[in-house]
Image 1: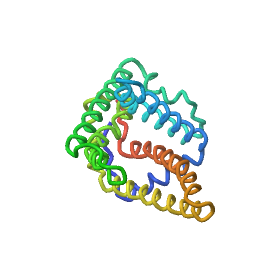
Image 2: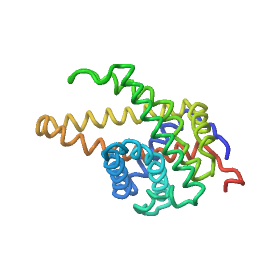
Image 3: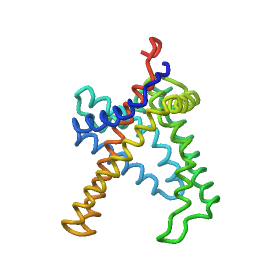
Image 4: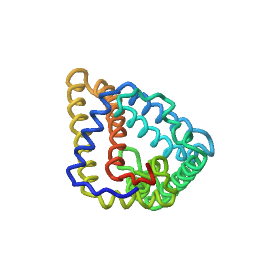
Length: 243
């Protein structure tokens, strides 16, 4: 496995491929995304250990959505079992994925706690939640570490420590493409959300606008999750030892 450097314009191509692939299998890919979200949220609601267990599922579930996207690119209907792909790739890779889950859960919990300490916790209702904003900002390094790590473990057999390192390197070396990619999705979320929100408000007022925005936001998030596979596919090239 070796790193592939792509031009900045590739970021827009990743956005397009995510949307196109989602539209090939909209029911399957949206259903799998909702299943992933519901599972993580339900597990996170468990008392005491819920937050940690929910965090541990994130790398494996993210990998499952990437496998679903790969299936869709091949013209196949991704079944719910793809969400368990991380645990069906052999004992060694399953252990590596579980270790990634533990690292992610502990890291996310520590970062959230640190953000709360730094900002004094959530502020009054109606004001900006500084704790949430700080947590998102502090999570950025963690997101970079885990952007490609699950896929590197699954498809290339990279060890957890190396997968985290290579993920950060890939994101930084292809920073232009990832910035274009992020701005492209941000523009789509804002543009589509504003358009549908305006139509909903004109037709039925604020209540209809809110009713329209929630499912739309989830569908857009499902499209975004579909596009993640292509960022990985184009950032790394398999060598003979990995094939």
